[in-house]
Length: 173
Image (spheres, helix red, strand yellow):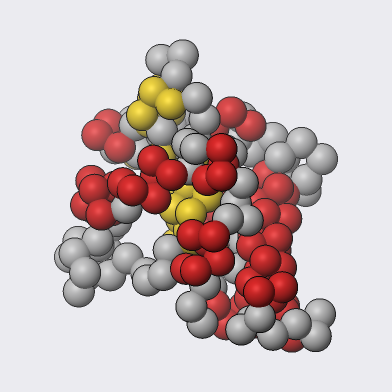
């Protein structure tokens, strides 16, 4: 999962065991997308893509709660209110759309590889909960197993809309 430079250097871009498979059988590496999202979107601290021959890609999101609180405060919204939580999800949608057609980061990745929806997680991936290994890499299989109910929910009509009850309930600031 990489390439050789003209100078004969090997650049590793991903791991074979983390490949995602679209419904048409296309395989793609999620790491570059995940890293770009965390790098360019200040409201997201951790981001994990998922697709296992499903009709669309989804994401598990650990929000940057401090950043979202500041953005909500600028709009005179409380993070404790229902409207504030819905607006927080709207902020995440808007920022992820920067990677889509018309966004300032459009063209970095094919739209079909970007998540159609996302699940907001109530806690980060850490060594303590076993979702990050000793080299600080996310243990994809453990995360997927732990949050499989949320992943499956994103493939339902209610779950496809990111402004859903489970995401609102996960916004425990």
